[in-house]
Length: 180
Image 1 (cartoon, helix red, strand yellow):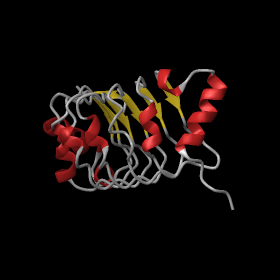
Image 2 (cartoon, one colour; image 1 turned 180 degrees about the vertical axis):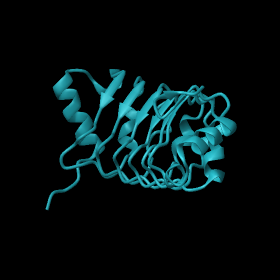
Image 3 (cartoon, helix red, strand yellow; image 1 turned 45 degrees about the horizontal axis):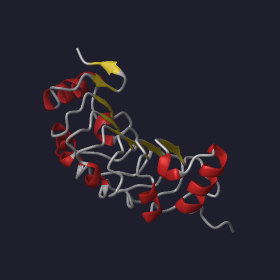
Image 4 (cartoon, one colour; image 1 turned 90 degrees about the horizontal axis):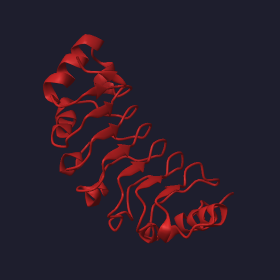
């Protein structure tokens, strides 16, 4: 059986491939690791200049180790095994884009603490009620993808779009389409 790739090992491999020290990297892609990364950890702290980090398509089950990433603007965690957004609040004042599509997220708390978030990809998760959806009214969202959640799938397209427009009046794009 394979042992999972650690974040530290993935960062070292990235440094060798790109010939840049991790501490100097502005963008880092640790997606598609084999064997997959299962845990985010304190090794991420060395990414002090990182503005864009991708850990998509791994087997990560929770968001951790990002509390010192004060320059991070874009975080991609799609196609993992994440069940909760807990841990994201450390980036409340800097994160502008968050991708967590194709995970197992039911509850959107603490998305309401995000002060700079403009783009939120949360499609194909398990959000099933408006109470959770309403938490997205707090961030200054402009673009959101939400297709494939039980809440969206339970409504006609017309009712879904009308409810979203009512609940998120500042949203400019929903699921790739402009809001009219």
